[in-house]
Length: 264
Image (spheres, rainbow, N blue to C red):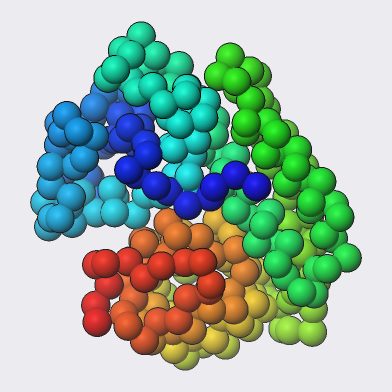
């Protein structure tokens, strides 16, 4: 399967060029899509990387491309960059816009494959992973024809079934898309809760029980997970972890890293 962890040293700062920035709590400036961030140096490194959060760019510390950046630069375009070959900028950014969601989808499919209770789904998951991986390895000219929405829809049925199997025997509360912004959920029992696409912005989840809780698409910006055990949650991603507020006592699933800005 393709690499699903970002390796910025093998990319060309595509995430600092492609997305538009809007002046907000996440970004200190407005920047149009397709234009390099003014903080980007000639060597593709961020000039304020060590102080992004204090300089008004916490959104940059949350972002993760799931390895799509190095795939575009090193594989799709054979090591070329938009600076060495300016005529490729538009095509590289277009490829990145397709590959990033494909790599995120692969992350979720791989997570589903590793759910013991969903072992019966592994042949179907392996087939879906092979399909998405093959499309993600397409030449630049072919990526524009990839229907990301259709692929997500096909995979979603498998992901939902994997979640259902994993949460069997739990209270399995249905909190899909729930507005839990700022809610006091400290110590709450959310075992097996379906929190897909739930809004947990600023929620107090300290000490909450989230064993087998489905967090796919949940918004965890500023959610307080200090001291919370997230190790057995379902479909948690690095961007979600980066967006939350944790500490040294927060437990994470295998494969996810503790963000540098979390407290000790």
